[in-house]
Image (cartoon, rainbow over all chains, first blue to last red; front, side, top):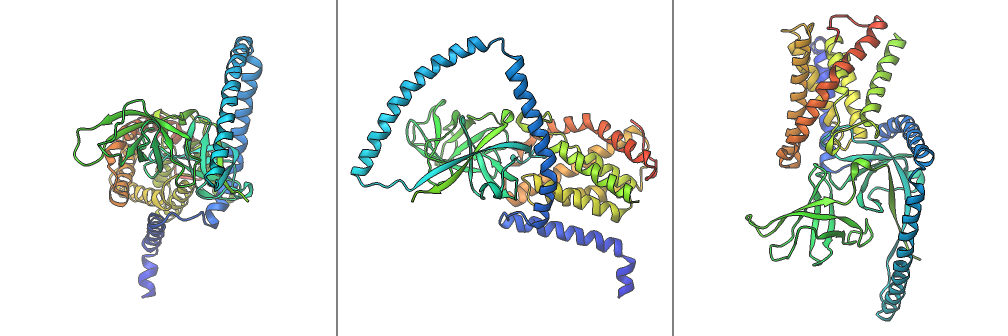
Length: 274
Length: 169
């Protein structure tokens, strides 16, 4: 018996590796597990050179922008001042609305359940395969990041954290086929789920054919799942197909974030109010 | 021997580093060339089955840690590619550029079929949304394959650690 195994030890070795790989895969399909000790060890070794090189390139690019592109600075400065003035006025009006909102909420005895803490992070890696849409960020458990935390930019929703190690975290982008975000159409308040389709675009599913959706409609987060604050921009409707079988519309969404130019993100950490 | 093994792991580490790095130019929709496949092919041609299998398993595992793929997917893919290479070595020596390009296409095809199968059977997705990604990735990988493969050959041949039976690009 032993000789039988010894004679075929190479075959059995290969078989063991296959079984280990397939069982890892099956385990992950059932429920995406957290990083294990080997994953964390590998990431702790792998992420420092990535962080170092990314920061070096980012700083160099920043230096280039700061010192070598001063030509248009004056013009840009006056434009920014002008837009700042407009924003100040808008801000003042918004503040008034916020105060009014707070007063009315008090009157109706509503309680705001959550507030959000924002943590900036740098992208240190992108998915090595073309089939999945994930990014690696330079913050991990030590910075208070947890699995399921949302990722946004001032332009809109980016994705959510799916795995965390000590100093690194992996995030799933909203364009990945595994991603889904509860969303609202801003104009009509129609609800649906924004799902990725892996081609840098998304689709808004489960919107009834009776809803009035037009190309150019703005899609925002509903805030229902608690991952993202309510009203964060997701994208715009780029196409609607009504003539198809079933109860729902086929709505194509163009994300507001340009994922190819993304360098820094904001991680949304939910913080319960006392 | 220690230097040889060290070099082996450093090569895998560096190739994965380039595959993951955010500033490495990628195509539309973030499509990247498959750099590691060149190393897997080199391992398949030059290393015995079980040493190669262990290396492919480790490479695939590390790939899965940094990618959005489920653990084990790329380990299975690279192990399958290794078996295909070992099978094809019975009929070809892979001493000409044509043979190497043929091998590269076969390996890429095996990878794509396994990815499509996993998407179709496990996740029940419409795999045709990926057809454009497949074509672009094939093109990028094809352009980079001679560079990666000849680079790996130069590194390992300078150490005189492997049998020099492969063609120079």
